[in-house]
Image 1 (spheres, rainbow, N blue to C red):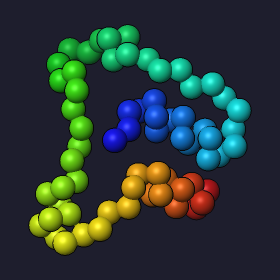
Image 2 (image 1 turned 30 degrees about the vertical axis):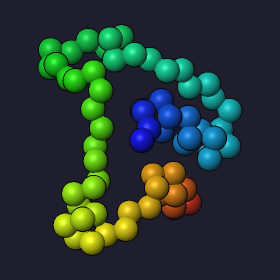
Image 3 (image 1 turned 90 degrees about the vertical axis):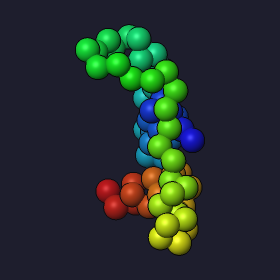
Image 4 (image 1 turned 90 degrees about the horizontal axis):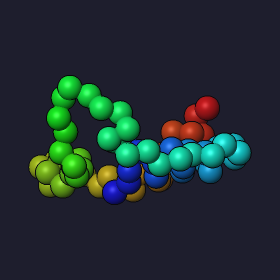
Length: 68
C-alpha cells in the first residue's frame, strides 16, 4: 500500500529529480464530498477471479516511467 505522498516521492526518486515532496493531510483540501479516513483499493478480487499476478506498484511505476 502507498499513500499519494509515497507515490509522489517514489516518482521523484526514480526520475532523479530534486524536488521536495511534502505530505499534506486531506483536511488541508476540504471538499463537499465526504471520504473515509482510511480507504485502500484492494486487488485481491481481481487477482482471484481472473487468476492474475499483479506486480507491486513500484515495479509498475518503474515500467511506466521508462516509457518517458
